[in-house]
Picture 1 (cartoon, rainbow, N blue to C red):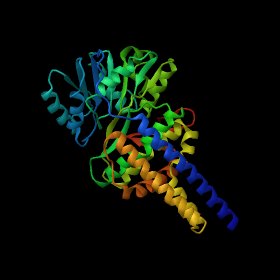
Picture 2 (tube, rainbow, N blue to C red):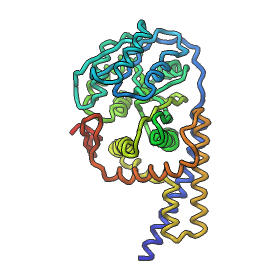
Picture 3 (tube, rainbow, N blue to C red):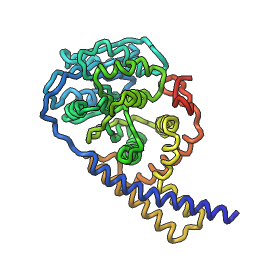
Picture 4 (cartoon, one colour):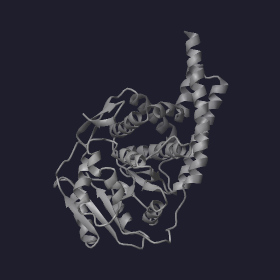
Length: 379
């Protein structure tokens, strides 16, 4: 029994050492791949922004406004979509439309086309889109003034079918939302950056899905994604199936986090991780090395806290702080204080362990099941 414990402790420390190397590599790549962007000076195409709304999103009006104050020399239309007349987002949407009457259209339509309510909302909204360049983004996203220009420029490159965006977290509803934001900025974001750099990840994320109407038509339109949970990922996969690229400009947008309790945090992140597990099971299992601090802590405890194990734990903590500093510099904002980072790391590790066993998730009142063949779909 003692031998088994020692082997387990050694394995955990080895995984932590690999995680430290992973963390340091991510810190370097984040600094190289993300930067503040100036607005491109080339010709701009008229664009329609599709914003599906749901619920009382904190600072929703500020989020929407950021999309309408762009350094962009072409007409921009925004289409807001709400499915329920009692939705608190409707009041904000109407006020925003009144302020930008010439540029904002509002669609209130309860029709459902499938299990994915967001996609149903988008299908209802798309009928009002006036321009060929379509930019879909979640209601909790806030952007800088160069955003639209960078997206449009990226789509003009040969062989590109769609563009998406890296994103970092901003807590907007108290302590738990801030802890969630730290997970987005200091775990999810660097993992995506490193995954893309190594060719291990091909993301297409709800922070931004920009594509031309002709490309959307070729992949079957929005209706092709009405019954899947990971609609953003599946849209990207369909675009790549045409032989086109999904690119990420070197910018990051802000994702507003609104979790007000520990249970809300866990529910949200568990849904994310289960979705990732269903789409990339090997990559999800391998992501255990992205938790060097919990791994080193458990390894040290199993081995009786020898000096070398404690030294590895200290190194893991310092590496994580270094990554935190690199992310903050790259995106120009902080998502949370360094003393909370170990707490955040243990929460992330706990959610990761739980995600290995969960077989279904809830989202907006619909139940989605995990399938090894079809990812996550309605069930």
